[in-house]
Amino acid sequence: MSNELNIRKWLNQIEKYRTHVHEIKKEPAIANINEENNVSQDDFKHQVEKEAYYISLNKLSVDELTWLLAERRLCIQKGYSNVSEAEIKALAEDIHKSGINRDELCWLNAELMVLHREELLV
Image (cartoon, rainbow, N blue to C red; front, top):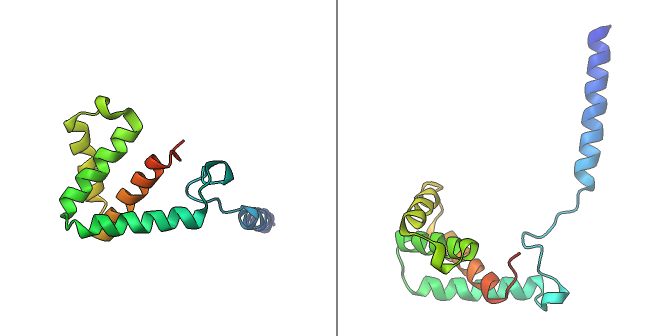
């Protein structure tokens, strides 16, 4: 009898969890894109696509794109004068290990460029 009671409790818990999960609204990846910034989701995506295209035209290698992404990210987080080459190298190695391909690197670099330019970063 005790097993049956535990199974019922478990089933009730799962049902409650599944209901809760379906109620969660999916937020955009960039929460700051709204009317006060005068940048819509479509406009942001268009700007990123354009930047990613221009980055891809530069024919940079995966290593160069990885380094640029690591450098951009750290410079935005810490400020341009507070970033060391060792920190960039460590982050670039982590990014490289993640297996991101060239197109994704172009896109991520473009996202950071647009976010920084439009002052959309929190």
